[in-house]
Image (cartoon, rainbow, N blue to C red; front, side, top):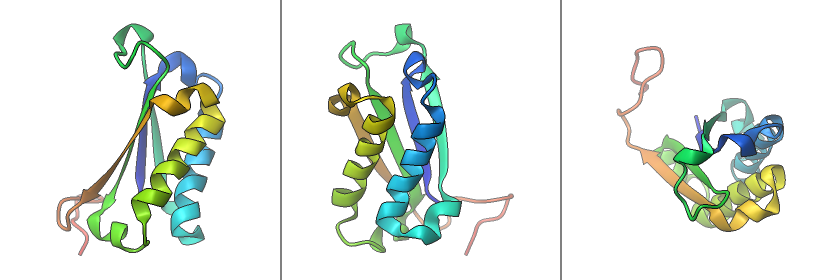
Length: 121
């Protein structure tokens, strides 16, 4: 299951939450296909402006984590997924944020995640 986490200034999230969640879900789906849509989990974390430290400007950190082997399912995955996630963020939060979006793709090795207390095979 792809987990997308976004950290950005709280005030910048106000009013764009639904568009951002939909856009990030669409971005992951555009790369992996429709089968992944019901499994995309998005969490938005607002940070008070006084606690933000990237260039003093509007910025966002996007982390997508999923099983390591899922990164092997799509050719050129980083080249496709990083721009798609950045585009989704800029579409929802405004183009001015694009230059300050950092995207990190995190692969979770087999056996290092669990659901409902169980480690999937």
